[in-house]
Image (cartoon, rainbow, N blue to C red; front, side, top):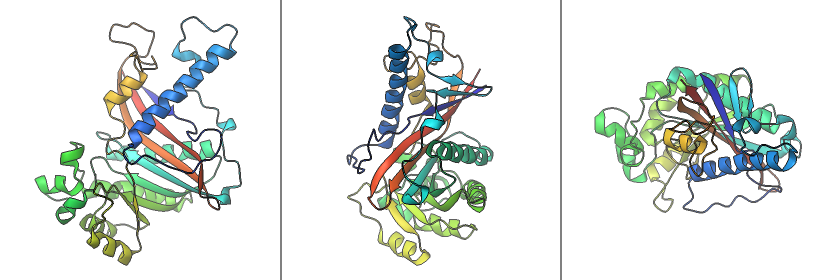
Length: 316
């Protein structure tokens, strides 16, 4: 078993830019496109800078492996970082937990994700961590049905029956995960915690069992950004800021990851093909989590650094 760590590096290019996104763009498109671009850039660098570049480039030439991890592509943490001092930035991180990964592993996954972001940005803490649970997708039309308990009603709670096809996990699993994040908050690694896709009733049940209360609820409103009034009133009462986003519910399905790393037309040839047509790695690839980070320069309101890490296990 080996851990695969995929990275996009800074997708903002050479200079900070005001963040503008198409209304129809989904963040999994941004993620997959940025990963492919970073893979291609590292492959091109090997070809153009090495006087002895092979005719057929192996993934070993542009990735980096230690005893337990394969970095795709190789990461030079010394070359990354922010241009100004830490107080100049608001740093927001969104951690996507993926389906079929045991809840018991999430504490370690959260720590791994935050550690990678801290190393990439050369900082000691982040301002806000938003957590996305698998299968939970906010739907303004379903606000009246916002319940985690029982069959079809639980699926309507997150809209997941219609959008992602994934069952919504129970609130006990979410609370267990939240307690792990509270520990990172206690250690000073995270200033504030936030949730994604929680409606009024789920928030009510959740808040009663937390020690560090969420500061943010980030929701995907598909109907002209109409936030349900009950949620607006409840969030205001509890001091929770409502933010919107257009992230996908399941940001990195196994098939997408295998396509990214496989031998197809758009693949990086890290994984072996069906007929062993390349000297790639063999086994089942299981996505575990994805983290998105954004560093905004406060006084100018521009995004200086934005990127993703994605982690998977390769099992024989």
